[in-house]
Length: 413
Image: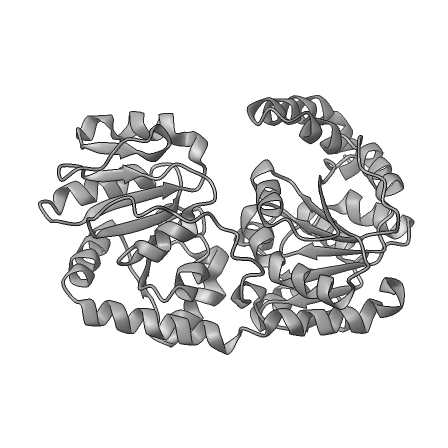
């Protein structure tokens, strides 16, 4: 069965899923735009930047800011797959920038999207490889550059049929600017051409384009440890561990990656009989509170700023980890779990510079928590090394923009 035929066969399921997500976020715009309708009309052809969700959107912001500075009269179209990604763009309110949702992988929806928006170029962040989208861009003479390009564990371990689709899609790409030499080799193995690819560095190291993150009130007088961006089952694992480390004066703050999971998390934690306060319910912290569930959007940076140290979620289940660079930028000591394959290059760089701690399992996490709680000097040293490592790469956004200008300056003026 051809890929295009497969997308047609799956259309009813895709439609229902799109409707479900639109209903969850009460967003008619999400529903219409994912199906290829109701896009704004631009006075001039925009530069199109696409990001999957929150992480990629945060990564792209410094790049977008640099491009706006270089081309102040240019319109920019920023697309995401998710409503949480849209929130990042709305929060930062950058000039000449319009957010839309990327159409689903359907020839009709993609054609409508390209006809209405007519982008000059497509800058695709990280791992987004969509065969129909790339083919339609080629048909409409929209050049594609992959920015901070990386290949996930899932992509590189795809079966022969999927790998062939990726290889064909990559033939439609003009430039693949990779975050690391390892990623460049993986793209070459997947079927990219040597002249397409170049290693430029990790855009995640760039200084944030905006300080628009919500300021978190001084919500507790107690010292606390933050577990950031957790996924299903991690809250239970870490809460159970925390219970075994009691009593101590520190508070445990858990910030789930998807705050809408609050009800599910509370149900999972119920058998532990912990004293829990929930931020979305405006519940107060007292001396008996053992765990604070920070289930809000846009406040993670504020929690990181106030934490004694940060444990990164997504790394104690086979999810692949979450971005450890934000707490590093804030000069925080960081602990990550064993499953960090989505950020393998970053973790290796941090470990080589003794700028973070990686544990093998939840038991070792308990040992490291106790060690860092009792050793302020070690926390400070880890945080200082992490900050120094970030400072070395702070001009990375400018380096990417220089390449984009070299490729597309005539199109952008």
